[in-house]
Length: 126
Image (cartoon, rainbow, N blue to C red):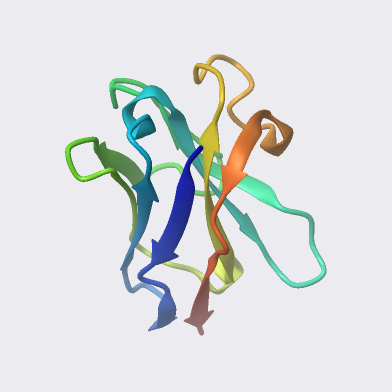
């Protein structure tokens, strides 16, 4: 069982940066691949980034590649999403999630993630 709590969202101007954090409870955090998803108003939840249990493998959606960086600190039970060069279209609620299987090839499928946080709002103004 893993409980996830996101933080770090807020209002930022286009071109700015934010760093999201996701704190996990539970002693098995280091065994889970982790992902960040986002959902804009009126749109479906979409994949943003994922990271393997060791941090050695990362994956990104094309829309954020080169601007976002996912990382994790297993000693702190925390996963991060550094977001740079933010655009208005990045505005969404951002969710972190724990994947109950290795990162594999299904990292972008939200149905493969068994635990979710409640989300943090990111708003990018133009």
